Image 1 (cartoon, one colour):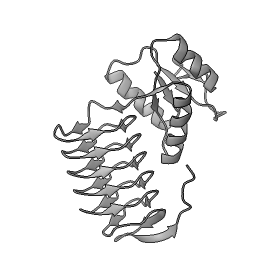
Image 2: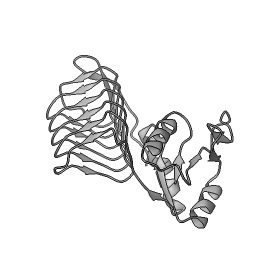
Image 3: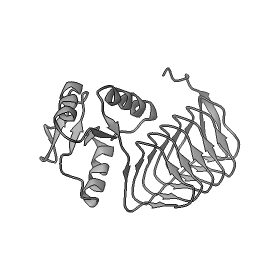
Length: 216
């Protein structure tokens, strides 16, 4: 497997690979940073180009990759680039996450870290990132490439649009709908629906600025 990323989130995923006995054949990828070593923790090779990644896919039995970086747009962009070289997107789920067994669906390429609670009737789209101790409650749906920061509480019957970012410890009250490309500030309490391409913050949360629509 190749982890797309070699910094903060990638290091957190590494612990999950250890706990799930999945360290063999593990590579990390970073084609942008100049401040990283040749090997992560002096053990795991960091590849620097898509050509190298493609060769690994072609010469091993494993063409899977996981998204080991934050930022919804960057996760989508890197996902598309790996799919072009015949990679197969896979999820990374901590054994210390608590995930409901009834009518809960996880899209391809989700990263779910320790302490996350997902109850029943929940749907996660493709490429979502749920950081430690986030809670997604019953009958809620997250779109594609949504990033949920540590300590977030998405309560029941919520809808979170594609490419949205929920800041640390924010609360989304029941039946709230967030549009696409919405950023919720840390500690905010969202009490009303939010349209596409907005940044909200505060208690209660209000629109602070409009965001440029994503060009995907």
